[in-house]
Every structure is written in structure tokens, then in C-alpha cells.
Image (cartoon, rainbow, N blue to C red):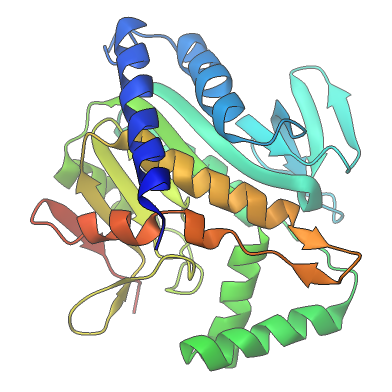
Length: 290
């Protein structure tokens, strides 16, 4: 459980960013994508991320020659090489920490296109140096979550891919139509409870969707594990910020190589507090395909 000081910091960040976004006109439907991207980069990412990460745009590639669609924001580990090209860059997927699709105002078509862009990152192949490390983690998921071997492999594959996000300041969609659009999109792609094929967090105006990714688990009272929960909330910034901070720090690694010891800072993040909000009446859930 996160300390009160940390929870208060995230709540304070929410208030500051919401006020600045309103004053900048970003919470109005007339705002532009350029304004939206600049605000996310300068006021959110540079506030919450380590100074050493690289923030750009372009396409993510893998060693098979496959590439993602054009991505609005790529957060990259500069220890990995990348190639600058016209319109952004080409980024090795192994060095990508997270990707974000940015919208000023989102509608049905733009939400589906954003989900397609995120899926194009999740479809790329991630290479590991030592196969036995993957095998060890797959066995861990089997024992910890009671997963079959196939589902544990899917969970591992989902978690080693960069976390993807969709952030829209405004939306033409209600809570129900946002849920319906995501459900319809999922009907045309492969997904499971272990590999949702979804962004980790979707912010669509005053609707926030949070994927059940193993790090966060969203369960029904019947024991069914949903793949995403969507809630109507005015806390759009803090959900996005806390999840992104956690994802980037975990992917960068927090290892003391001198002592061969991995630090854990997950207790600083108030996920339990925020997940509890998903149990309210104004929440919609999507179950995996059968």
C-alpha cells in the first residue's frame, strides 16, 4: 500500500495538470493534436519520467523486418541504438519503454485506429538473450496465477512488450459507447485474459479504461477475470501517470549489479487505491473471448 504522501502527490499532480489543461483550452473540443502532444510531452512525461529517457515519435521495428504503424509518442531507452528518419525514427522494440497514442478529441473511428496502432506494437517480436530466463518466468506465472502453460506464455509475452497507452483529452463517446467500441474492436482481433491485445490504460475524455495485465487484475465476484474495466472519472491524469511511471521503471530495471539485487519500488504506487474505484456503479467491464 502506497504511503499517504505518495497518494497525495498523485492527487496533487491531477489537480495541477487538470487546471493547466483547462487554461490551455485542451479540455475543449476545439483543441489541436499539436497542443495535445506538446502538453503530454512537456507537462506530463517530463514531470514523471527519469531525465535520461528519450521521447520521440516514429515506428517500432523488430529483427524480423516487421514494423508498427506510425506512433505518436515513443518512450525509448537511449542505451539502445535507433535510427533517425524523416518523420521521426525507427526504434528497436527491445529498447522501447512505452508508446502513447495522443488525441485532442477522440471519436469511434479514432479510438479504433488508436487501438490498431497499439496492437501493431504488441504484434512485434521481442528477442531475449537467454531462453532459460523466459522459461523461468513462464513457470512463475503458472505457479503464481494458476495459469496453463499456454496462458502463462501469453502473459509473459504481453508483459515483455512495451506498455501501450491511449490518451485523449476529450471524447465524443460516452462510457457505454466507449465500452461498445472496444468490445467491437476486440471481436476482430485475437485476445485472451492473458494477452488482452489492449493498451494498459485508455483515457478517453472522462472515461478511463484499465487493462487487467497481471500487474493489475480486475476480477468479477464470480471469479471471472475481466480484460478491462472502464470507469467514468475526473481523475484522467493520475491513472495515466501512475501506470506509466510504474511501467517505465520496471522496464528500465532497478538492479544493484554490485550486490546482484533487484530493488522493488512498486509499493510506492497507489494501484490498490485506484483499482478500488473500478468497483463503483459507473463502471463497465469487458470479459475475454470464450
